[in-house]
Image 1 (cartoon, rainbow, N blue to C red):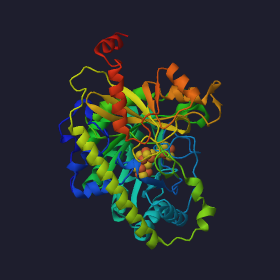
Image 2: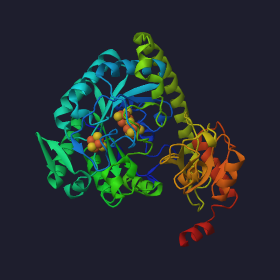
Image 3: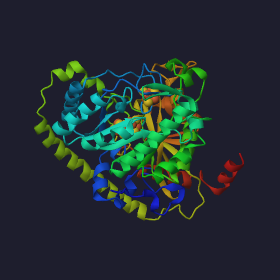
Image 4: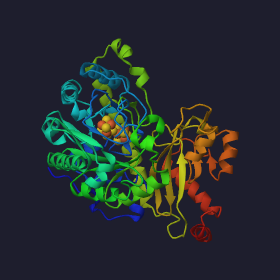
Length: 496
Ligand code: CLF
Ligand code: SF4
């Protein structure tokens, strides 16, 4: 089956519509029923779905067949995970038990992924045993896998056999010169191969695997780690090539390199991109490719909604004591999924109606504005500023509101009252919101209010429980009425 070419629709200004830019959602209507069914409740493949549906990972795959300069083998595979976290390794049997326990207790969990702690396809017995049992015993759960791609071509048949219809390949380059700066070696045909030769083999395997998956009708997401000075200028080309070969979605993630993680890049002082650099590259790639902007770089044993981790509720000792009637759980899950989908459809219809009305600012010269939003899900503003561990960032402009990405408040800190050079958590949070001019939350305390204002970020608690896009647009209109978006200001900013 041939996959649809997503970007055949006319390009919109800034590469997005009034809502859910960069997601598959505003494009669902163009997809076949079969593909729509595959993505509409997958929290990674659909930006909309990540507000409602959860995923879980089982860490069954310890070994890896390559070395990436951003990885330390003590930790999870950094191709999807944030470096510096370690997952508890499970046997396939434990993984099946845990999956059923989570599915019964978190019915909105729709997807089981294997993403480490090493490379799933470098551990084929453990990975496929887990998938084989789950596809038979828990057929209502979608199966998903993430790989560096080296062993992908030889695994495609097996993946198709177990109904795995979502595969992520991490592709950081299509040029071996660049690859040699990212991958010091690969393990290939019982030998360790280094340098450009290694990178060339890896790239060929990734591209071949991508083509084979697409030919089988399996949806492919491509992850790329943005490494400033190494592959940042090259990733737009990667995007073009993988799109041309039929990849469904591209996820450009920031390199996180810290000396304490003990990775080559961390020790060498290689920096990661800042939020604005990442956004600029994602926007550049979006001209050619459907972009994912809501990735949370999950750990290999993540459980829950993207960005939350409920793994502690499902440790091995706890799941041992849980009696699960999976048949009954499936019936309950089905009803809950139907209710969520009905709610999503009605919200989608509202959004379509809103975006079909022309924006009152369309004819005006008004600059775009970034706003941060505190939310725990369901697409509404429902979180206290002080409780937010991350903020979603939206851009409002005369043509509408689009999702840009998220900013973690504790990226480099363990959540103590101070971190780094004596900087308070509040100061760090404000630094994480760089570039945003407003923050919308359900409530905000007096102290943060003053500090946010002093930093040029307007706190706003007036839109609690309102849909995010509508609230962001309302605040944007208020800013315009207050004269903050006038043409004269655009000129001043441009010349600054
Ligand atoms: Fe897991 Fe990955 Fe499947 Fe999602 S995560 S294997 S596609 S179910 Fe999702 Fe997490 Fe980002 Fe991965 S937010 S790290 S993209
Ligand atoms: Fe580490 Fe994953 Fe790279 Fe293997 S593929 S070296 S586990 S980041």
